Image (tube, rainbow, N blue to C red):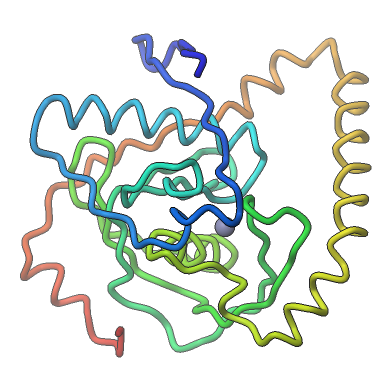
Length: 233
Ligand SMILES: [Zn+2]
């Protein structure tokens, strides 16, 4: 483990780049336990994890990352929102649309495999931010699919569990080709980065993921319940 240091909003923060566990690691099959914000130590741990997960996700170039994918058995995930990365503690879907989503999804733990899974187009999620405060947030489109994928991870469910054996076999046959294409794209994007070297610094700065620290006030139980009207199991 290499400890790294980064300047963020007027202070230095420590983080590390985590390593993905193997796809067959049993930790991916266990529901994660809630992250507890009870002491100053917990808050420090949350801070460290949030930055480390965001940096790891950015490094891996994925859309989402759950804590058990990097060997940590707690309910925390990071989501790539485009220009920033959100880290969510103890996320839960409390409401969803009835419209199905139409995106194919991949998984950092299983590169090259793409599957179409039944997902909701819009979801409302309750989670705790880096400081333990409760947040209610709506997600739609690809981000909503990504959040649903990560929440499955946190419950010990993999996307490969959610399709028929035939569909899984069909998708597996395309993995080799997909990996080749992905490799080509990585090489190409590296070459492109070289070409724009004079302005490289600016580009890098713009792409640095930001940790979203939610400022919302804690919702009371009753407030949260009023949002639930759907058939969530
Ligand atoms: Zn995944």
